[in-house]
Length: 115
Length: 113
Image (cartoon, rainbow over all chains, first blue to last red; front, side):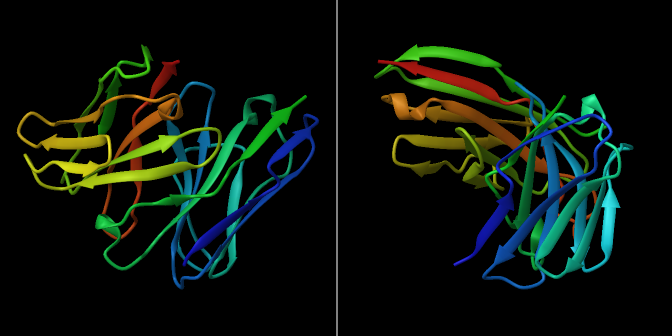
């Protein structure tokens, strides 16, 4: 069966510091991968998605970037964090084949606080 | 612009009550509608609906889609405290091979003993 791992679970960082959040998927090949941010009391906002290694699409202009160095690894980064980057970050995957009729499956998320 | 709107935003009920959560959508090239339950961390998948009028059911939860009126409802009967969660509705949007979802704001359900 497929599993998704996301770490760390919580992170407290000072303004201006760098960021690296990692997500890996096991038990499937060629998944579509997604990064979301969820503000308190809000729905999920799609930040980035990837349909293959090295293929990253950004959905909203922001201070963050994403990379996919391996098929089942997705990384969310920033060079200098802003206060507005605080939030709950979720990674998700879906099967690529027949993707329009496949649900996404989520990791447990990273709660990021910027001080 | 594609959008998904859920109502109510929050709801407090007592154990044993029945609740109905609403999700309306506007999306180009509708393909499906998904419901998720989010407790502390990861949203977990509940249902995917593609056809109007066909109810999906899992235990005390059920959902139905109306493609003419562009909405879906999620019903929970005989609620329990374990049903307390944020319920999220989402629809795919954009081109078919990306799998991108647009989410509603979520409905926060609190079930009191």
